[in-house]
Image 1 (cartoon, helix red, strand yellow):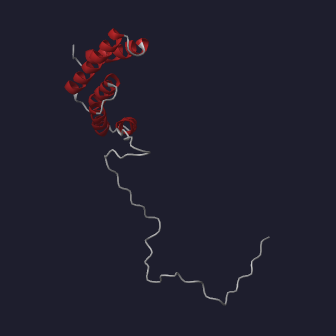
Image 2 (cartoon, one colour):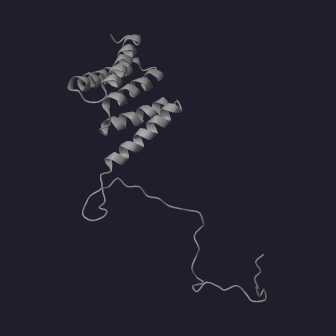
Image 3 (cartoon, one colour):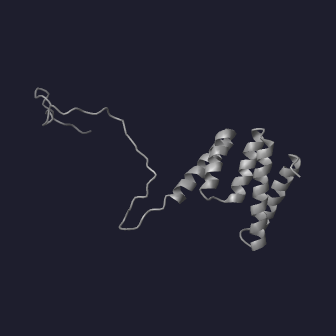
Length: 147
């Protein structure tokens, strides 16, 4: 057991600057900017990879929560940011399909198929995975009446 001797007859010490106001505890203000700021010398930090990761996570989460409209918006932004066009267009097609936008879904699936064919033709990526993805998007196109 720890015991302390505290003289309760003495008043607590006051802050040196008694006119200072105390901010409400627990409040944190965060400002986010989309600027490249130098860190660690003269090298600029590339925010595009971080942005891509955030958009990808948001898109996946929204899709899993069946918020297809906001998932589609995130996938569209991700596509503009230079993400993997094949998988993004495939997922975008799925979003549009859930939203009842057949023509948009078919267009997205066709873009995914085009990218997958180009990748397979050039030997880029996992050929077995790309073949499976291509089969999936081609089936979706047929189901939606796009071919």
